Length: 119
Image (tube, rainbow, N blue to C red; front, side, top):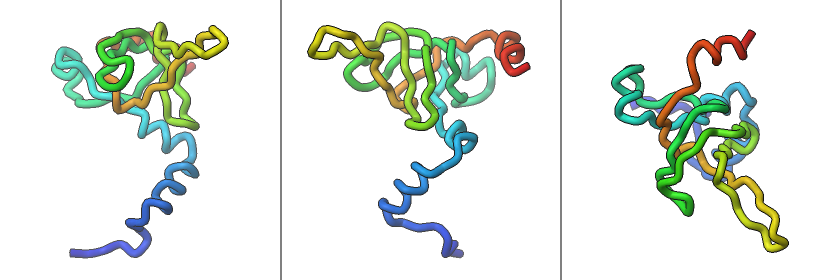
C-alpha cells in the first residue's frame, strides 16, 4: 500500500487545512442527501445546497422541521433555514445555523431558475 507523504493524520493540521480552504473548494463540502423521490429522479445521492431549496432537518435541536434555505454561509460552512430561529435573552430572534450534514433536501429550486441566476 502506498502512502502519500503530503497527507497528515494530525487533527490540528486537518482543522487548519479545512479553515484555509478557498471558497470554491468549500462549496463542494456544503452538500446534503436527497430524499428518496429526488434520488430516483436525479440518480444522485447528494447535491450542493443552494438558497431556495426546501430541506428537512434530520438531527439536532430542530429535528423534523422543514423550510426553505435562506442563506448558505460558505466561510463557516453553515446553512440557515427559514422559520428556524434561536431566541436571544433580550427577546430578539436570530436565525439558527445548521450544519449541511444534518439536512435532507426535499425539493430543489427549479432548474431553469438556477440557470438564470448564473447569467
